[in-house]
Amino acid sequence: MPIPTSTRRPAQQWRADAKIESVERLVPDEVAVGLSFDGRPHTVLMATPDDVEDLARGFTLTEAVAGAADILRVEVRETDLGLLADVRLRVGSVRHKARPRTLEGRSSCGLCGVQRLADAVRPLPQVGEGRQIAHPAVQRALEALTQAQTLGRLTRATHAAAFADPDGRVRLSREDVGRHNALDKLAGAMASAALDASQGFIVVTSRCSFEMVEKAVRIGCPILVAVSAPTELAIRKAQEAGLTLVALARADGHTVFSRADRLVEAALETV
Image (cartoon, rainbow, N blue to C red):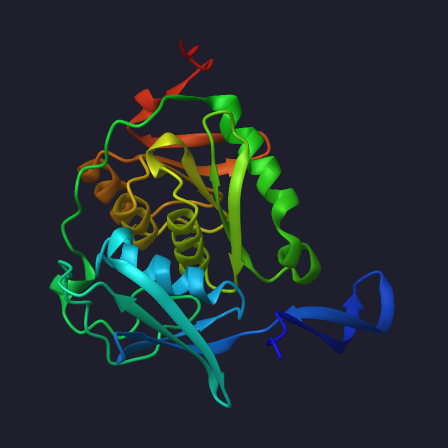
């Protein structure tokens, strides 16, 4: 039986202009997901228990363990303690050692348990030029992502990540209690759907730390849009990788912090 993604819980609601009242709220579920490569345990992520195969596949890509073509399958099974996801890689594939971890990955953290500073902030490859997009396309994607957040609307407690085409149409979206998990799930789903990350942009509902920049770059997406503010390191890493970083994306506009040349007033006509 699948683990539910949300649970209804009783609570008492207080408002300054009203009496205390008993209410029920849907809250997102969070479970331990053990991630292994070819049967060798690597880390434990705290995540929303849906799209776990996408999560494992995307983690493999964004952590630069292996390429999409090297992933044969992802085996997910349920245990009394949570979920186990084992990524099976192609024999003889060029794979890179995953960053060693000694702690579980909390839903709020992308680098929990990483042991060395060199493993935490690794050099990033350059992203390709990708496509230019019009500023209004960013706004259309933001609005579309709001509509796509099924679990978020129910619980008000999850993050979302989406891939949009140059016109701002959301092609895929994923949700999770962890912002990093949501982006990893999206990366895995895009790989399964064979979507070319260079032909659109990613939108996330969270603040933009450098790990979010790293994940976008690792899957070859040249434009990352975040609802909240970026960190200084995120901007610096985006500039180094040639990533267009858009943040503070709200209903009334957005701010571009790097490679603003990919954002134009009107979309270019394609031949």
